[in-house]
Image 1 (tube, one colour):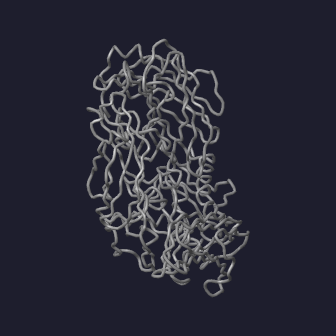
Image 2: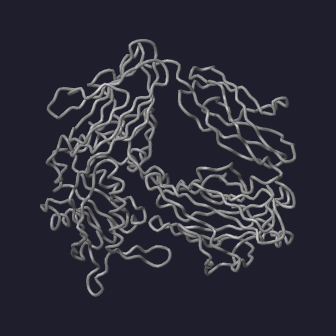
Image 3: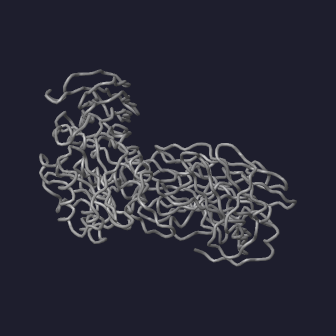
Length: 635
């Protein structure tokens, strides 16, 4: 974290900023905190930037209530408690994308004015991100997260972006908050007594067609705006494409744009590449991320040209493909959970050329690909118990590029489960306790409900749900601290084994404190069943929110932790060390590199921002439940 010098010249100026919060509707109630005096005021001599304040915000996704407190870890304080008003309005929360829509208002209650007011939202190591930013800055960087952070600019409709006295401006922020992410930390930056020294806007980025062929070139254009008209350089970092860290633009005064030619020196494959643009004036820079799209020039032969070699595809998929005389057909397989689907759509968008789509429905006993369902570019699936769909895309002529989209709602398959909790025994009979920074947290029915709700929110996307009746069976205090796997096996033998329900055990210490949670699978698929498979959790995983979902990837999906392979440092493309019969694609991308998702928990590369499973994994769990239907009770 940078340290800032507190300058008296900025003390009066920054007092015009007020921040506050509300839920769905504004309120005039003031927000106070135990440390409401810890809002800093800072000015950097080189750029005229003033740090008007830094705050922490937490939002309850159920009530949309926001709590804002001044940030406590800054040097230099100014008591603004009486000025804080409720002018943060949380409009909505989208659980699927984990994104909040928030209106931020900044009010100038004083007769002074400022320029280029920015609200900077700091990234963190969990993936928190402002997704509708105006640009990025490296000012006031904090420990954790990226070295640059996105911001929203205010008063953009005013000449010189001047924030006048006694005025208020509002901007909408779309904030991606992966769970658990910790508080949202943001700061307000003001330029004074003049505009910011660096460029204030990067916009209108465009490029001509760039092909995937090595040596292909394209022209890039971008506009950069600077109050002092003294931009010294504009560059773009497109390392995967160019093989060099930065490509410099030159200024075309006649067109008032910055231009450059970019070469695909690396033969980068088709797709979208996010590239960093840096615009500099003197010692200060503005940053923005732009997309360069590389176009596919022809079809690459693949091995999904018939039903028996079909590629797996997910129920919520968006992919691009190509068919031509060299690669005339593409086949995709979509295996559904045991109860089938409640509906959905499959869409073929033809980007160029001409191609066609046929969808087949196949039951277990039918020969691949089953019965033809329909022949169309847009297909609406009915509610059915169909176990497998096949999608065939074919061309009758030259190259055809397409985009395939699936949006299918699986019917829910339910798995009954039982929760067992070990107590500390006489005299308190405590449930397991999370000894964390601050007050300790004892396991409770409320906490168990939260964990189960997050588990089912995740698995419902793929058609599965754990059914718990809300009651708990307390078990002997001898299992409060588990010291070995033998004790774990004995615990399951004495309680859950033979109940015909999935067994979840919560203990205080797991295997001497070395482990956090685990599932006990059986290597033989036929024996990987409700009697032999159970899961155990210690308090150290409660805050994840995802441990039950993760462990039941092992249980119901017969998955293996990706981190087991990461620990052994298998390089991309290396297939050694994988168990026989375990498809590599379940744990790696097409290049054989680790993907990171629900089943990847290698410290310190936590993957909170990738709370999903892959298409191959989605099909794998459905395949396992289809081929071993009696291993787990379900309805």
